[in-house]
Amino acid sequence: MSDPHRAPWTISAGVLTAVAGAALVVGSQLGDVPLAVSGGAFIGAAVLELITGVSLRRFGAVWMPQVFAGVVGLAFGLCLLALLAFDGRALTAAPAALILGVFCVTNALFRGLDLLVEQPPALFSEVTDVVVTFALGAAMFAVWREATPAMLAVVVGTELVAGGACITASARAVLHPEYVHH
Image 1 (tube, rainbow, N blue to C red):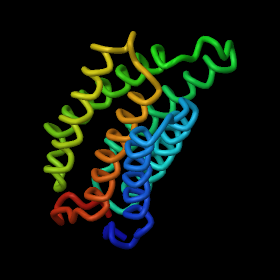
Image 2: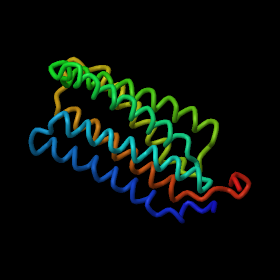
Image 3: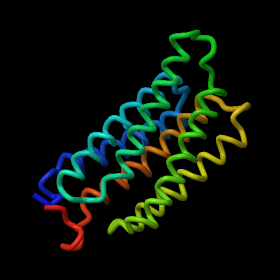
Image 4: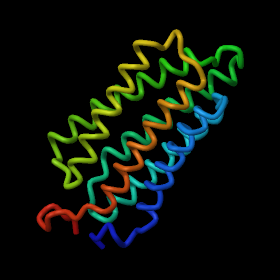
């Protein structure tokens, strides 16, 4: 039960997340991507990442970064929905960019700490995800007041591509036998 390859859907979830991210980036270059589309993709990816993390734990793989990113992403996504429910005019690109920046920095810091603690077998993808996610968060903090829906689509899309690659690598990583939970 410790072979992550027994759950090929986890690999598919990573690929789907990355493809959705790439579609957001391309879409932002071809025309307007509504804020709701970027937000929906973000929330969908958070749910996929949470479910994938729980599944990876079941198969003995490194799982905590995916669960954390899924829970935090879902919480921030629900915060955006609450803003929308409270007052649709309150949800513009600027507050969404600020919330996205907080998510990215929080996620990057947790993943960075996790790198030190767990030393995951998919180290390259995890480090890449930490660096990309932190850079995206820093960029959102720097320009959140001038953010546009297209800018958010690029940032969310890039985050989904990095996260999807990380999910796929974690699902494919083979743990050393002494780390496998039986």
